[in-house]
Image (cartoon, rainbow, N blue to C red; front, side, top):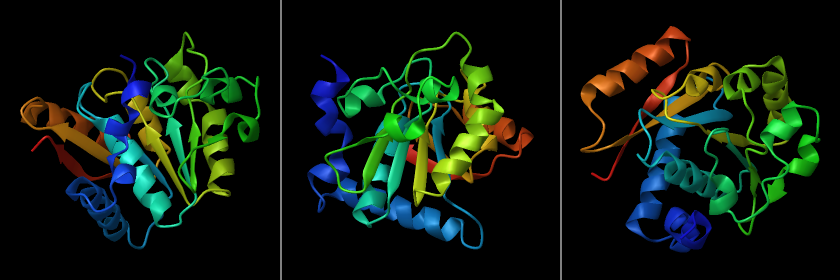
Length: 213
């Protein structure tokens, strides 16, 4: 079964706005706002220590929550190694982030609408041989600067922080980092390692979302 077939599982904030899960994402949205008062919070990175901790679910539902607040939201798949947003929001992945950064496509034509009002998606695009170098390029920073003019909130779903350096690279370009932790799977040592790695590149961790508590 593909993730596209189970996209309803991901988008609980859109499926039932009165459910406890939906309220949790609204609370997360509010907590982010208060934790970033006095500083920019337009570009937010969502990551985790290891894989399968719920970072994509958190990123997508947080994006829905912002969109429900009438914010113009762009959700970017920054996981160039194992992209998934093209399955959560079923669509082609032929034009995406990597294709923009390589000059093969313009971002205006690669970004697509969704069935959710105010929510736009940019898939990862063609899987490259050098994800870290592409994400760390000047073009990536310039792209985020350009898109920040058009969107109120930009959320980036990244690979796990302890697997590859991509999350740290994207963290340097973000206004804040939301760390998702799966209770019973991630260890305190792993969370400390992520914290140190983000601090090493001066990325700002806003807080931790405890998943499966």
